[in-house]
Length: 147
Image (cartoon, rainbow, N blue to C red; front, side, top):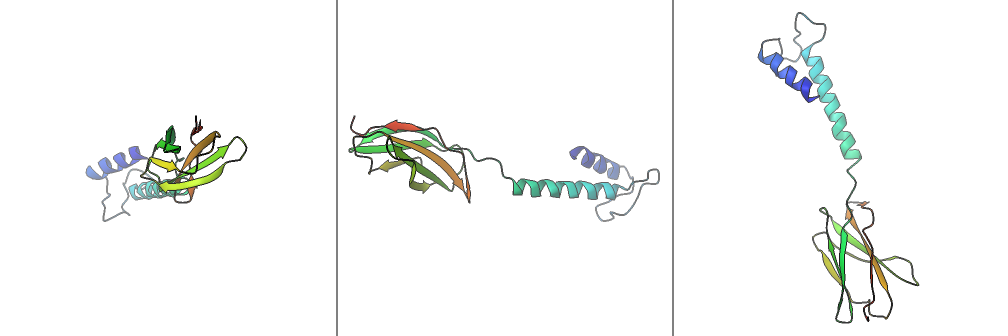
C-alpha cells in the first residue's frame, strides 16, 4: 500500500491531474483515476487500524525473578516485560490450588507476602493486566520461608 502512495505522490507531482483539493480529476491515458486509487488506499488503511484496535498484540507476562526470605515471610520480586496497568499474583501450596494473592500497580516490581510464614512450600505466578486483558502466566517460583 505504501508503494501505491509513493506512485500517487510522484504522479501528482508530475502533473497527472490530481491534487489534494481535487480528488475527482482523471488522467487521460488510463481508465482508473488517481483519486479512486487514493480512496482505496485510505479504505484499506482504515480497515487495518480497525483490525489492530480489535485484536491488540498479545500481552507479555512478567518474569518472576526471586523469592527471598524476609522477616519470617517471603518477598516476591519480578521484572515487567511491558507496561501493565497492574500485576496480578497468584499463590498455591502443596495442598492448595492457585488463588489470587494480590494485585499491584503496574509500575511496581516487588511485593512482600507477609502471610507466607508457615513451614510449607509457596509457589507463585504472575500476570500482566492491561484494561480487561490478561497476559499468559509467568514462570513459577517456589520457596519455603522457614528453610
